[in-house]
Length: 444
Image (cartoon, rainbow, N blue to C red; front, side, top):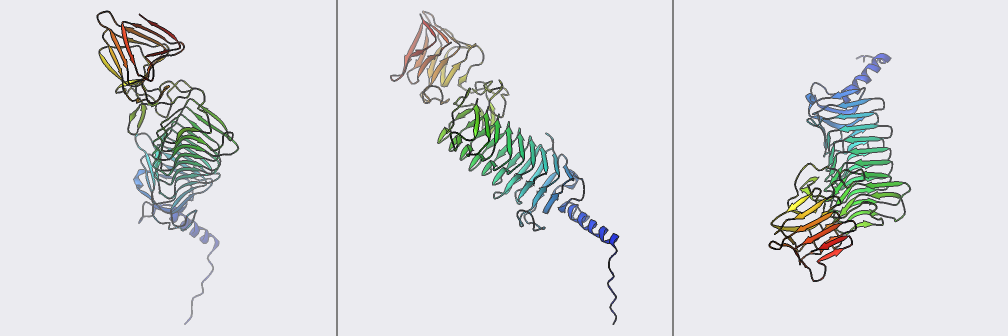
């Protein structure tokens, strides 16, 4: 029997075969229209017609190549790695060495479901931009791990061990949410900026930074551990215009009282279990009292919220702006001239700011509750009526006004404030005050 000789394949045929193999790995086939892995051979666009696009093995966007994901597209990371490569040979990765553009919209978001995978890896030299994109990560791994250039707008990362890990490069996260991870943000290098971002429901830290970071207009709330932890390193940190509230350990904690250099101002850091501040002072314009959110996971301030117009730029502190929701009871800050009649209960510190007048009509009563729902002021457990503007208590001989502060702290007239009481009966707590004035006080 004669065996036929295996002749060498011509060079052109070899190149065509290799190209065909690469395309078969990185693009869908007729039999598996949505399965992708390997390396993209050129600029590629995914659209909803292929939903769900399933990454069955590590998929690499090489340098010089752009992967564009259109609105409404769904991407799923398979539970095993058919490529057996990358940072984790048993978990699928979307590896960005070139450019990833996830172009969701407000009405048609992109979904990257990596709950069974390793996550999105943006390597040095790579660029990823996520708009209106929802990323879910595996509980032991990442939503996004970046050492390149990463930008997210109006996006959400949830469910990973670390929602966003920044190892190097530059990362910017704007107007989005990081939630239900162990770490919301963990930085070990590079420069990170978060603005108008909500970080909630993490099991360890909302923010853990060992490299420069800027936190401006964020809401970091209801995390099981510390809200913001800043390690000791050379560099700078900005913490400004944030609501850091109701976290299970520290609010804002620096490892060192001196490094890194820091700018901290105009924050509401309140009701954090261990302490609000550690190794750092509150800074100019900061407050510490109940922000009076709408409630649940709606972090918009209500009508009397002290967050309103209290930021360094004159807008609202935190990630979400006031949208008209009312405060359900009498506490917080009165931003407009107000007249009270009849019986009223002050459930927490009530502030009359400069330029505003609170008028108590004849016959009106104000009863101070026995606990302070604002948990702020001079005494965080007793209710105070704080006058920075004008208080006019306009009782008459036949219809007196009553201020019952027997369970509260009393009326505080601050420097620059004015209080005028006519035909008014004030009762104070045995340990505190009827009226405490460092402003202008008149009683008739």
